[in-house]
Image (tube, rainbow, N blue to C red):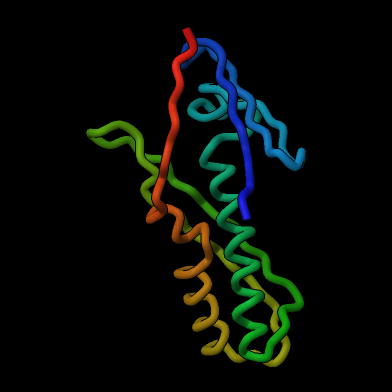
Length: 140
């Protein structure tokens, strides 16, 4: 299964403007330097990674709880993605997941084990270990 998203950027870094969209049409949003670094309204790549991670983790946790015989009444996950400046430029230095769930019949030990398993194994958690390929074409 492949999912597709696209991004277009026009202009210089600080005065340019971009648009990011998904093939499904669920997302079509602008992004810019001011949004990413100066707090202007709009999305950022880090915010999108956070949304992807929170949603993937929540689904994975639901699956793992189900395998243990539990059904979640609700799983609320917030992801905080930290962009830090280093000697090599900018890095996503950490992602913190804050999870609050209601799971009938589950004790804390079973829940913590399921949450740790989901954190380690949801596909977005593993993304930084992915094989990233590219085809780059310069139009003349």
